[in-house]
Picture 1 (tube, rainbow, N blue to C red):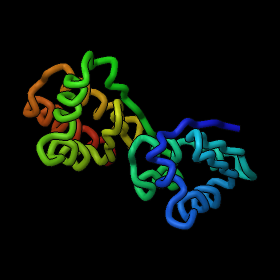
Picture 2: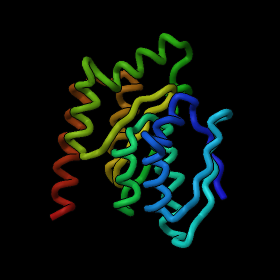
Picture 3: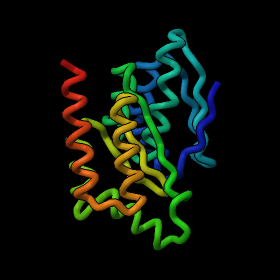
Length: 175
């Protein structure tokens, strides 16, 4: 049995319209999900398929970190996909600094996040004090490096240069 604390404003996304998202996660994972919307706790009880049941907490966690349920469901379909969460509160001393860091990662009108997603083939969510990434271990490592560069003050051009090199390496490794 697994317990996950979920932000209050993400409970509805986990349940979905008419309970559809919760039902879909239960069907795909064979797990039973109990949601306490009062205190934001989600309880996951493993089902018949232990391997698929282990994916349910990752899907719940991804939705809790700001991904829409459709994007989070990729964790059920592809065993290579992983959720990685980076805590920005370690790098930001003040609320203004947090806003600035999130702005550097998202970029003007979401451009930086969009470029990182399309170049490396990941999904990125900036929510609360975290940045979460859905991708393979190799993809997540590349994006983590890019995000750490942005946090450290590197220019967007430097980050895009790194991503271009890494993109070519990913393409070669898939051939």
